[in-house]
Image 1 (spheres, rainbow, N blue to C red):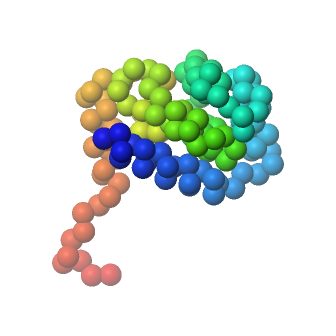
Image 2 (cartoon, rainbow, N blue to C red):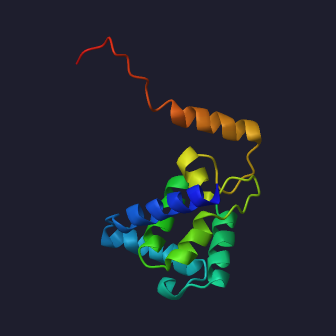
Length: 136
C-alpha cells in the first residue's frame, strides 16, 4: 500500500510541476504559503511542512484552493517534503491529503468510513462503462 501511495504522490508532484500559474495566482498562493510560516519553500524542513499542514487544517479553504497551494508548493519545495505533506492525514480519518483532494472529501474534517466509501463510489461514476453495441 505504501508503495502505491508513494507512486501516486510522485505522479502528483510531476503533474504539479507542469501547472502554469499566472503571476497573480503565484502571488496569491505564495502569500498563503508565507502566512503559514514558510519563508523559503525551497528550504522547507519537516518542521515547516508540519506548520503548513496545521495551517491548512486550521483554515476554511476549499479543496480546490488547497490543491492549488499544494501544486504551487510542489514546484519549489523538496520532493521528500511534498511527500510528507501529500501523505499527511491531519484530520485522522485514515485518508491522506492527496486522496482527500482526489475524492473531494474535506481534507480538514474527519470523514466516516461510509462518507469515504460514498466519495469513492461517486469518483468511479465519472468513468462510464462502455457499451460495445453503441457506435460513434
